[in-house]
Structures are given as C-alpha cells and as structure tokens.
Image 1: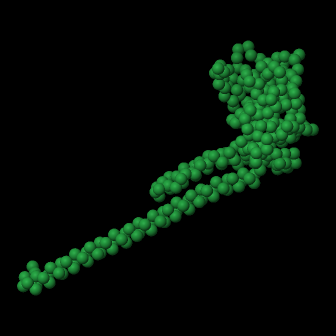
Image 2: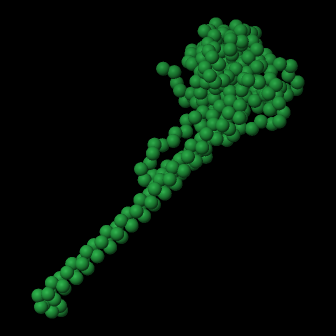
Image 3: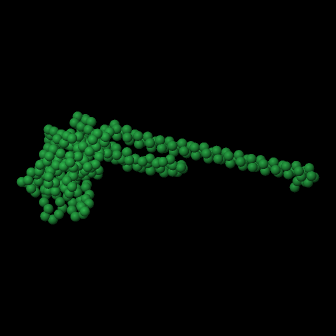
Length: 307
C-alpha cells in the first residue's frame, strides 16, 4: 500500500509534495520548472533541463540520460522519472499517470493517450464532446493543465512575456472553474415551516455565498492575450460566470421573498386569529349579559327583588 501524500500549490502549480517521511519542493521561473529538492540527509538539488513546453528532458542527477516522450507524453520507464515530466505536469511514478488539475487530480495515462475518467465538463461544456480525449487529440499544439479544457501552447516567447501571460490565463481559468463549481454546488433548502426557520436558513445561505471563491481578474494585456490565443478554449468565460452568480443571487432573493411572503401570511393569520378571538370573547360576554338580563326579568316577574 503506497503512503499518502499532500500536494501544495502556488499560483496554480504544484510547489510541495509532503509525505510522512519527507517533503519535496519544486522551483520554477514563472511556469518553467527549474529544479526539485528533497529534505533528506545528503539530498542534493536536482536541476532540470526543459523544452519550450516545460517537459523535463534531463536532470543533473543523470546528465547523460535524455528523457524522450511520445507525442502523448508516454515514456516506457516512468519509475525513473523526476517529479515532473511531460509538459511539466506532476507525475505519479507508481502508476505512470499524470495528475492534472488543482485538487481535482484527473489522471491522464500517456500510455493509453486518454484520461482514466470522464470530464465533468463534457459533453456540452469546455471539456468537449469526447469526455476521455486528451487535448482534443492534438497534444503537439495543446496542453491541458486543468484536466478539463485544453489550451494552446505559447510559441515565440519574448523575455518570458508569453510565458507570464499564459500563466495568468491558466490561473484565471482555474480560479474561474473553481468558482463556477462552487456556485454549482450551492444547495438551497426545502420550504421551511416557520418564520424562524426562514430567518436562520437565509443567514446560512448568505454565509455560504460569502465563502465562494473570489471573482478572478485579468490584466488588460492578459485579457487581450487570452482573447487572441485562447479564444473558445477558456473553461468558462466571465459572462457565464456572472450569469451563474446572478442565478445564485436570484435564488437567494427568491428565498427572501418567500420568507417575506411567509411572514406576511403569518401576520395575516395572527391578525385573523386575534379578530376571531376578540369576536368570540365579545359573543361570550354578550351571551353572558343576555343570561343575566333574562334572570333579572324572571325574578321581577316572580316578585323576587334583585339584590
């Protein structure tokens, strides 16, 4: 049984892999992997040599050995690989699968050239029609860091500019997807039975909406870059995200309207109950007066003096 590991991310990329006995740390320049280090005695920093897709080609631990991949990223001896591999993605050397996405970890098998599980954003969302396909079957020109939606590789980098912009767009897409998923998971309760239930549930719903991930933002330059190079490939555009958030807000507002309607009906019921109780009391008092008047009349008729 393999030991469990915790993966910590920074800016949408894996930074630390922590197990029971050791912690492995990755170093980068923007999105390009530079090295890995492990906090063990006599451990040395392992430097990376990469290509323009951030795939690891060589390490300082084995400078004579060049790492080669098939177009889909397969390498026969995956157990001898460093932490990162094809396209700079995190590799599970035990099974030879790449773990794509932050916290989602949709496993991709380069040997089978497909994902091991269907895309939750397929077939009508950003995942595309084929729920198992990797990069729309075009791994030469595309990457899929989120495990959901493929993106075009940055070409013709100029002083890391495209690299930075690509990173910003990828982080934006990941955060957008996380917010959309969180909005989709919002649950609205069944019809409460009392005004107090409405009040407590409304507060709970507001707190749940406050806990949603923040709305991601892009710089003007990154937004233009996304529109030019990632057109139609972002997982969820800002407009759709706004619609989702607006829909959630509408549900909350509808719930509040139901609460007010419930309270209004409750007040009407209480008012009707007060009127009914007052009328019943009036009738009871009127009946009591009639009975007293009748007793007086009977006594007068019988010559009995009323005390």
